[in-house]
Image 1: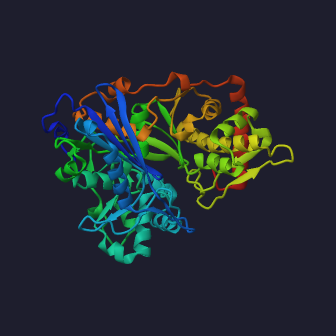
Image 2: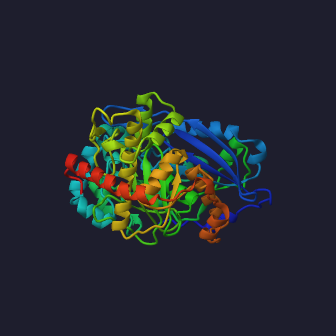
Image 3: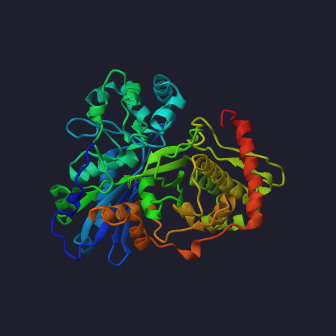
Amino acid sequence: MDKFSQSQAKAGVMSSEQNVYLGIDAGTQSLKLLAYDAGQKEILHVSAAPLELISRDDGSREQIADWWLHALRQCMNELPAEIKKRVRGIGVSGQQHGFVPLNSAGEVIAPVKLWCDTSTIPECDEITARFGGAERCIDAVGNPILPGYTAPKILWLKKNSPEAYAELAHILLPHDYLNFFLTGRIYTEYGDASGTGYLNILRREYDRAMLAAIDPDRDLLPLLPPIYEAGSTVALSAKVAGEFDLPNEVHVSTGGGDNMMAAFGTGSIAPGVLTMSLGTSGTLFAYSDKPAIDPNGELAAFCSSNGGWLPLQCTMNCTVATETTRRMLGKSIAECEQLLEESRPGADGLISLPFYSGERTPNLPHARASLHGMTDSNTTAANLCRAAMEGATFTLRRGLDALNRAGQQFTAIRLTGGGAKSPHWRQMIADVFNLPVEVPAQQEGAAFGAAMQALWSCGGAGEDLCALTVEHLTLDKSLGCTPDRDTAAAYQTHYQQFLDLLSQQYPQIH
């Protein structure tokens, strides 16, 4: 492992005015840029550029890496010059699991297969069989091999684009590629690397046996980036500093996957804080100071980006479910909020299995959405809205069961993502999880978290991260809520009905 010197963070002479930290978040739908003033403790600027998505009927979901650079340039061009001259550090958040293949010249040689790509199911089965089965994968490296992970994408490239595979010299993740653009260096960090399937999260190193299962004919280890320790930084390249008109002394932190950076942005950097992100996908994660493994294999046993672990559940259909229903009904968001007010917990017996994009947890890549319990009286617009939201919430609720099986306990949930703006959804989560809900005031969780990591790292990572989080992270008290005792009790019954239906429809689920 390459442990890059943390002293690099202090290189250069910094003006007292240089206390702005940039957070870059390259997601599936857009790239965002956030500027945070650490002295004033305020977000100075947020901009975003949309990203396209290539979708095919075989489950392929891809992007072109140059799209990210074009979006980054657009956002940087919108950053005011007076902010640029005060920048001290940059942190990068990226969608996890994507496979960015480079040749020896550092050129991208194929479209980037993303986290939501489900075309690699045969490759997952092939790798798993060669390694000795799913249980051995979990026992040996901490995670099973799932379609979203990076490992099967590498085998997919070998089988479907042998010419590109022959050229392959570097295997990067999306955030690694942006760091490479910014610094000219190829490197990664433990958090994002743990979502590849070939990082042994127990030993915190690349697993040679898993790499051999991906390709028995080629040693993939030399193609993988060195892993830098949390708190490390690398100097921004002079070329990029000149292009973006940034100070020459700017340093780039190790960054991480979007969930790892959202952990910084919501305070899940110490045990006990549970974060839920309500975006296109739904995620539930928490920091652990030791590996947290679900014996059922439904918990992604990831590393964190601050030196520990980040057990996580990811679902493919979160706001996908609510937005699909909203569009089908032809309603605005405000109108759907009013419909939720008119409906009751349990949606009068209507139950949604919201697997519009297949599902990752539970592992049902071929599943499709379905609606159950319909009668001539309960299929109202109000119940359809509630059933969609409940289905997405119940699917995430299974993640709490997995975290409990892994020995994790919590006293509150912190929400981030677009769905957190819904007051009815916030209350539903409090009732379904029977936990108080807290909402950080800084709602760009991953981008703000990336800026927070840069702030911590550029200080040499010597400052206590928990203390730093307390200083800079604020909760919006007006958005918090607590469980209603009677509704929480009712939701225990509705949740069990959801689980019963799920097991009937998919008996292979634990």
